[in-house]
Length: 397
Image 1 (cartoon, rainbow, N blue to C red):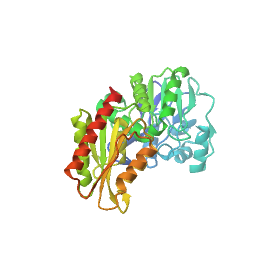
Image 2: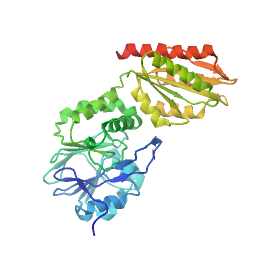
Image 3: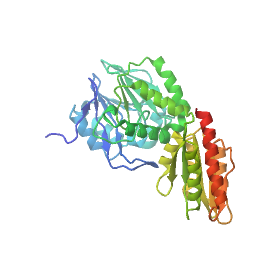
Image 4: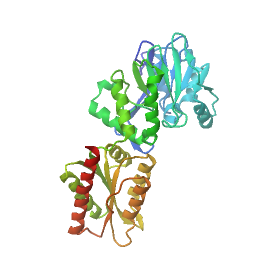
């Protein structure tokens, strides 16, 4: 009987045997409008090796793909590059079905798999001979979990990069060059901004160390999204650009509103930015969510946050977004706070405190209107947008 799910050959000795999740729309708080993939890879060598597994619910899909290449019980080793459940969710099932000689993970990965599933696995340290080729391992702690590592199969030049260089992007094509590049670039920076950004210094250290590893890379195989078979310098350059977080000549205005007062200030500020000749994006939290905000933050050198006050606190939607952005540690940002209130007026003050804690540059004090902004307050918001856009231009040109 012909299998419904088929493996795809990606090099002379390596097959993609992962799963495509077309319908997932939320990935631990990250909106995945285009779904995702859980990539797993089968190396056919003297020691047959499975690199990573898939999320719970996709076990049969992975096993069917493997079965189109080889009897799964002929797999000798399983490599767990990352213990997060989207990669290890079927690991116990896979071990039971495959009965491998050994399962390898990083030192922290072994501890994590023990904590999650009660598994005892071997630590991948020295290069692992598979017969004709060798798998080598590099620990990449906190990229983005303590257990993270990447592995390299020298026979075919495959870099299994785990969560690095990935995108949440489901599709019927396997290779990045087969996709609309504007979509790929957006999903790549969105993924970086929402998953990797907090560890940017470690990304730079990894990129700096790659030349010394002398890897003859023929393909980059991340655990999510399409794989790369060319233009590796562009991939590494994009990650270096994301990690350096140099100010970009672009602005974002993030706001929530109850009775349109804060929205009026947001529009006035955005128009001031536009008038100064800087591209600006407005994000209404009633229509967007936190991962869209963080993507805009990563792409912008100037970010304004505005919200009403409710029950002596900043509006809850803004509190959520600020907490999320703060955890991802953006740097080199010009910031601005604004808002509206009826009587107590804590909202804009609390936004300012959060931006100060994130070390945003705040050249202008916050603006806050009572009930509905006056023409004078709207003019002040416009002027603030214009002034901060001009300041942004001085640090980006």
